[in-house]
Image (cartoon, rainbow, N blue to C red; front, side, top):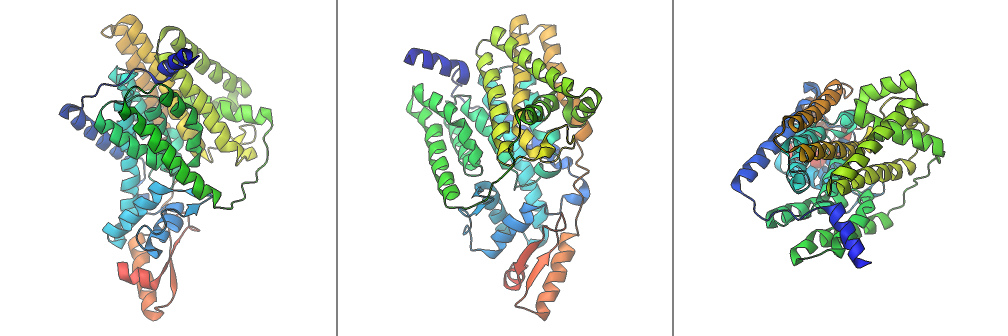
Length: 444
């Protein structure tokens, strides 16, 4: 029985990664990080880059301004702990002048996107040696169509990107001390920023079953410790998550539309296809992804485990994420608008990994230097660009009032009434930052 489980672990987690980390790889990683960050930043219209968005303003920056340093780290919001957003907001308001806080928050959020894109590129080298398919995955993360209005450039929604990194960390086996350290830090932030990270417990168990060196214990131990902290915070919070229960048909259509079809046709293409041929578009997309996954299993050796794990966790995560907050609008029969697109961020990235595994399988079967394998990998990159391009610019994120002018007006109001609470407008208009005059004047 144990031998069977070990074989399952080898198939799912793949070979152990080399332990050498050369300076060329470090420089390459920094270049990828910078490129991904710039790509994510450039998606935001110029007028919105210096505007705080939603929870970034009213929750995380407001709390960082009002509380002592790191005083709110373990405080829940929406029922769970948000370690990265709170630490990021704390760092920004401590280091950056108040007039530049919105821009700094945007830069930090986009830098995290670039970091995840670069980390995924290097971690998947043990599973997908060819660079072009991995580059396609990184490009998908940095320019994800479904990141849309609410995820890209927002620290409040950074956990959706961190979950991508968490999955890739758990399905690769790092041997380099540097990669292990970076992976552990990423795991800690991911788990302590989203309790949905608990769905990856089976992968952690697989890693523990096939431990062959003490260094391989670090990632599972950090995951377990961070999950305990997250669950303690969750257990001490009372939040009403009452939601309608979707029918099997509604849930199936939501999965087909928001997991499979969007990964093939993009955000705008998925809406157009569903309006044109209805449920048939969902069935076709599901069958295509299933056939690609089956082909990778048949011909891709250890890549089959990566493809299956990606499909399984894409579906399981999406189902869990939307069922606890189900709305009929998630059913494409009701609406093809991409509200709450954040729930499709991780699934879309995982389906892209399946496509990359397929391109790598073609390369392995034909020989890495074969022209046809290069064409297959290039086609994958072109597909990613084609899907991302229509939704590249996040035009729906409208700018709010100029932050620096609003801060100056609030400071003037404080000279009249020093004991007052001022609200600095942000975007959307109802998500302003409430800050006392003591905190406002002291930091300005």
